[in-house]
Length: 120
Image (tube, rainbow, N blue to C red):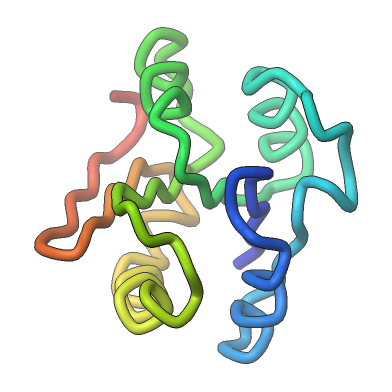
């Protein structure tokens, strides 16, 4: 599994994912900081990455285009720090790894997790 971390999340997530055996790259290392969502989606799809974001627009973009890939992991919390989210995000990703590899939208908040198979 390979994860592309969006600009709205800390680059430190890269190391956190790697500690848990997940290859990760922050968008700032592969693209321009103000890239449009469609550019990030295209890059992730081309390179077979799953997008990890705090941006609600990715789910909408997947739905509007009826895309089957890339998968998107969307966190919906105010506190997006690693110390707050790591124990929620990483087990959830591992639980749903097979669906994320095929194409899915995973929405995570403190109280619940929802996954939808793509296309939405």
